[in-house]
Length: 348
Image (tube, rainbow, N blue to C red; front, side):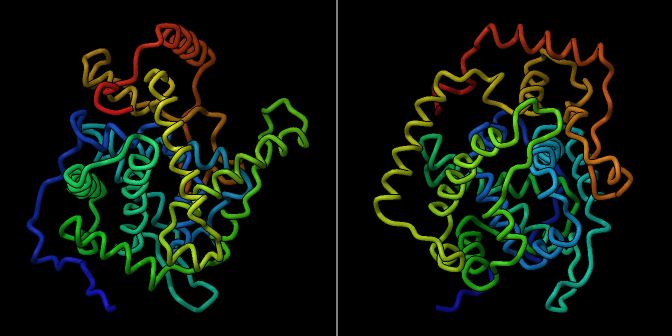
């Protein structure tokens, strides 16, 4: 069956000033949740399957060289476009700036640029679907009304980047058509995708552990994420990736999701939420000044020294020893309170 492209024309979408999301949004509730990390292989693979994005990763990324640091530091500004309030649009511009030099020609002779509106929106669409799938499988599920609300919020969120809104579907139903069409007709298994599906986590220099022990620790963890990815892929994507998925696997994934949901009932905000998200809630509650400095990635997550002058890298600012000690003390005392998870009466 042929699906008509759901992308809206510029004329059909009324202009709107960027307006940041706030603590009453469902996106705030889910995006900063630690459980999104269970989908690390899923989102890495599904993003890279888009030909232009995969080509940019192959030519410009050093993910395989330092996967943990690369992902961990990148999450800070990505979270900021949701959680930075009046500064969210500035964070969006910061992220756009990292992509200006990511361009070239892929192995098939196709030109690519990370700021191509279709390519940039695809990456955003995968973060939106990350929320949908995390909530559905690991946080108790979503109603149709909540999915539509999250769709509207993802449009509001995307405006923070100042990108063309041309690729953005007009409704949740049209987004589902967009997603289905991309999965069936455009996604491909390229080198960047295979790198994610077969990834090995190198031991960071600061981890005091023998490398063989480290490898044995992370091998089952990556394998579990690969299994979760297989379950969350659309049928068309799973077929392209030549992944096997049985009804028994689906039952096991659903049971695992329920175990995760129940386990997180006892997880306090200080552990459950990303630091950028936690700081945003504290600003909203008046526990931090509205203009308090934004939480940045720890300096040990910085890219390798030979890459720090390149425009595509976010380099966390260096913090003094006193600042780091103060942060450690603050976190330790915060965790001893074991405050209940935010919104636990509504969902785990």
